[in-house]
Image (cartoon, rainbow, N blue to C red):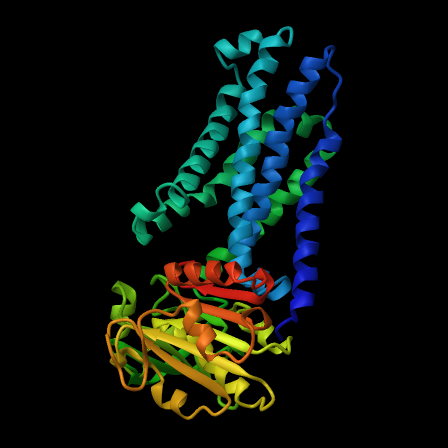
Length: 438
């Protein structure tokens, strides 16, 4: 059952509070008993980096297990991804404090200077794992930010898999030589973290082998527009119950890459669901050739896109680009059952033959559908050019600021329209988007 926007906000706020509070707990175990202020300061900053940074890494690792997060906290997958990234950045910044301040601490602390020249046992055994963990973090961060656009999805994913080694390396580094862990009750908390990490490792590995996935069998493949097919499948195991505009991760085999697709159609009585796939890359191109009786492993559902449409009385304005139409298909069906609700769909494609689910859209009575063709100079029935503020204003009976907006399409289109709406005085709380490239 999908949560209301308010319930979702409460759960998110609770999660953020727990993360913040738990990440500060290690500081209560740090003993500031050094003979000088500078030593205590260096010690506190070094411990903040290592201990609090480890807690952020732990939470980042847990939030990477999307199935558990969706079940117990929130199905807002895009929000979780953003939080996952921010925790990673925060963890790197904090952990960087550790070497930055532990070295001057060792330089000033009487009797510790020789340790900087040559690491004795057991430091020579357990410092390298910490260094390796930090290097891996920098590599993962670089591949996810500065180098992301230059790397193929396969290379990026391979680099990202090294994150599984980071937490074990951090534990291996800290347990044997961390004085705060050895001398205080924090060691018990660290042991709990270690056990929980191990448990989640097992669950994620089992999940990778499809143990918790739903199984579906393809029943038909229907052409839908240019280079686009609708793949319909029936459940064999653990049928999903996706809400409007929700998506799931689909893969053709246990070792195949999983890709997210919106559930564009769902039959509640039979559990049959459909996805609409446009040939836009290697994986989506291969899916054009799927045949009946093939099986898919399916993980989901995820997403909260479109939810706000049913928790507000404002007119609904849907802005779709290309295959970004698919999240609106079920949304339109539900809006058709609300006769007192105004709704508009601005659907942009390059040409008329790229329009998907055209027959269904032509039958709508409650939703006003406006087709916009960017690759055509003139058309007797449809608008031409791009979806713009002026075009939206032309069809709306209401002021722009009085509507609820839902955008899905190529990131440049979504970003441009979102900025244009805000420039016209539309509140950011009334603009909701789903991006292709998350």
